[in-house]
Length: 136
Image (spheres, rainbow, N blue to C red):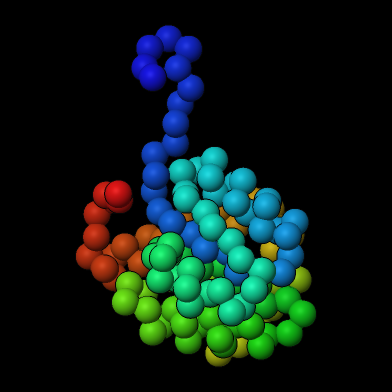
């Protein structure tokens, strides 16, 4: 729909997979990212990550490192083995070092910070792939 009064529809700028058992965070992250044009899928089951990486083909995977890091190395291994690798953003209960010497972003921090980090990781993925902002 175009013309006066037409609702602005965000431009699709990337795909994000949120892997967390924290449903509140998953819903908040999905709402925030969708408002900024990202297509977002989420799962609270580690066993679904390989399937979802294959079908969603995310540009960015947000993985929750809170409550122990056993979930993080598994998700990193799945993402690294994918046909179309994604960038990984780790979130947790505090800004802290986590698995593989990476840094975990506080998941309950300012939404603008989460968005900025997703955009930073996404830009790095596009640069690595040699892509332009054109998605189906």
